[in-house]
Image (cartoon, rainbow, N blue to C red):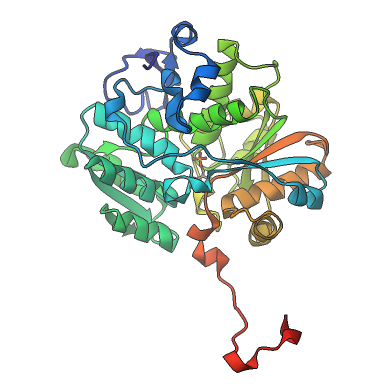
Length: 403
Ligand SMILES: *Cc1c(COP(=O)(O)O)cnc(C)c1O
């Protein structure tokens, strides 16, 4: 049973009623607030742990009122993998990857969309739309299909090929837009009155954050409520980082963390699309505006995020940093994780490896610290980045000397 209390505007702190459809307030995102006393009175971490694994076990701290409205594709708990070989290569003792590539559709977008589509269903929505430059469109299309809703997806024409096809295969009406991601978002907003669809864009509805928050709840549980020193997270729109920081705050207020310590949040971007990095370094409230940044890490190709100020706030509160990794290194950092650990690291999370190496060198992260890196998607979704040549032979040609 949810202990939701209300929605809070990040523009001015004003309160909006739960149980009604909302997008933004005064142009800024809304955050879900809970009655934490009621949560404490209704459940314990031990009871959570006894329920079936995955995001839905935290239902007191999630917004859905009636579990019959749950739209699920079987969101399993994702493993927290110790990565000693990769750690050794980078010069760090205690490196872990939380592998979100196992979720439906092969990315952590599933958490956000499962929650947002469930809430949309509960609040009577029958049609949804989103701009996307990567995994969001396919994830929304999948959950909309599961809910029997109609779905509309607008993507820039350089969106990765798997992301294009998955949206179409899940039955979403999809368009390749000769333009940038913010122009795709503008189509959704401009035509909302005529089409009547609900706008599911990043941070333009309040519940994707709540879904992604479960990464933090799950991690806390997997670490027995003793949080790691550092989290590295590839940041595009920032939903995941904002959500996890919110989760840690809620757990702290509930008194369920074993120690006061909360992780330093490292927001990781590619140096060819890093609006948060100069903002962090110069003490600005918002990210800087970029014209048309390129990166093969499609999920973090976000030139201007609506919630950039919330990401920067969380990073600063946590004592972390916003850092960028070299775009040229992305493919080889992916290879490193695939070869040394067998983990199918996506290009977005490869940027986290680059940031980790740099932060170790610059002394922002210590070699003995416990570091958790999020693999937000499956390498296999990025066929363009993975593409390589294999030696071609005739069956009779092969000799042991070739091995
Ligand atoms: C969307 C996406 C991101 C960025 O996520 P935010 O929480 O919006 O910052 C990172 N990695 C992958 C694989 C994504 O699809």
